[in-house]
Length: 140
Length: 82
View (cartoon, rainbow over the protein chains, first blue to last red):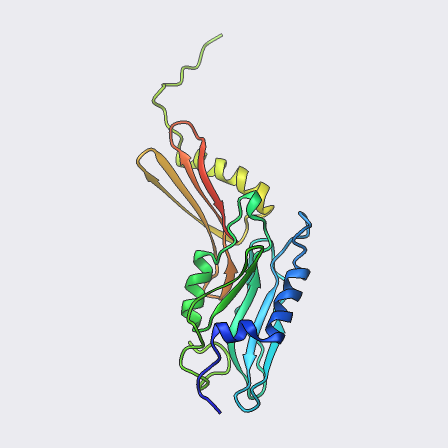
């Protein structure tokens, strides 16, 4: 059992995470100008079993998604969040993590993945700050 | 009929700059609620920036940022953050 959380790169390569990213993107209705909205959620790691688990947040709006209250999972630690940027670059939208995304990712102590038409990127630390100890939710 | 003369040097007020930004932003975002506004003037340009008003919560997102010509009211550049 390791006290070090999986890195963003390791998480991104995990099948459960890839499935979650694809599902969030599909549910964001990126091709629908009216229904287009942000989706996302939380990524957990169980250091006893090595399992990765996903929990979705409530659907967001065209410009925002509340990631403030991650649900708790027994014996697991929150190791990242993820959300979509569904609005298209062709209409002037920036696909990258916003200034707010970067600030909150750094403050929260876990990587924040962003899924856009350009692929996957993340803001914040490379892995959960402080390792797999302390609070099961955001580490700071 | 009296003629209203507008001085050629008259510049766009901060209020008008905000109106210009809002008119554009509402088209892209449909709804600008939940955003806070920062407006400042640099040289002859208004910088109008909308940010997520998170109130201390972790909320992913963003708002539009504008550079508006303070003499003509033209939007010089804009980025829609999300």
